[in-house]
Amino acid sequence: MNRVKAPALGSQRTGWFGGRWVGGRWVGAGWVGAAILTLAIPLTVWPSSLLPALGAAVDRAGENVPPPLRIPSNIAWTRETIATASAGAALRGLFIARRCEHCHGTEGFSAESAIPNLAGMDPLVMWKQLEDFRSAKRESPVMQKIAAVLSGKDSADLAAYYSMLPTSPDPQDTRAFPQAPLRPADTGVAGGLIASGDAGRGIPPCQACHGPVGHKMGAPSLATQNADYILTQLEKFAAGTRANDIDMPMRSIASDLTEEERRALAEYYGAGLGQSPAGATVHK
Image 1 (cartoon, rainbow, N blue to C red):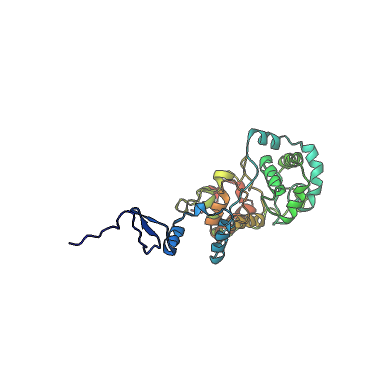
Image 2: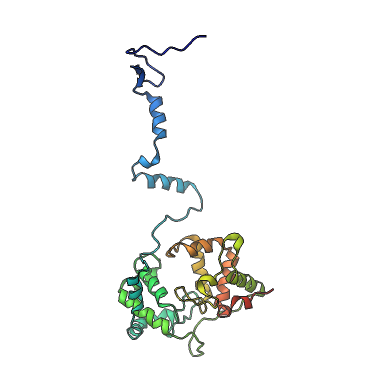
């Protein structure tokens, strides 16, 4: 039986790697070895400036590429932040709100279904949205310009004022709310999602965050919100073009809903049905 004999110590031999056998080990590497070693280098040692370019090249080759990840909001709910947002003066907010009436109505109810109603909104919620507009974490060509000239104190004052406005009907104003009621089938779909969610898809009930009657402290009020505005926001969350929800609850939920379900939910709340417990509107 023939044995393969290694070169003697001190001898030199060129290998297919392009290196040399010196003193019992290979020294140097040719182009084949260099290629293998290069491919074996982990991406973590690549210059960080190259990685976004590599990722962008991959993204452009695919379809339905989600927006790049970013910090959703500059707001952190510390004790100091809550104190600042809660310290608004409603009387001062009333005077600042005069510039808001053209779009949001004199009583916090808009005449356009695509524009949000602000009456009765939780002050912490409204303060955060104004701050997100100001920092461009929430995008809107109109609201970003308006919020840019507001201070944190101005935002708190506005939030305090609108939170005190009543949400009861007023036949003397021109509010768009409520909109036309839904078809019975759509009412059942929306009511089921609000009351129970969809465990099979991991969708929690809407009332878990927004309350059984569409209003809960710390969450945007949906009880008297306009249908077109809600639908637009659900679509933006689903597409990732609105991304100021901390921990991504709305982006995750909205993207799992079908287009028909998003519309049914928007019209359900827009018709004022959210002011009653959802179970009362679910057709058995």
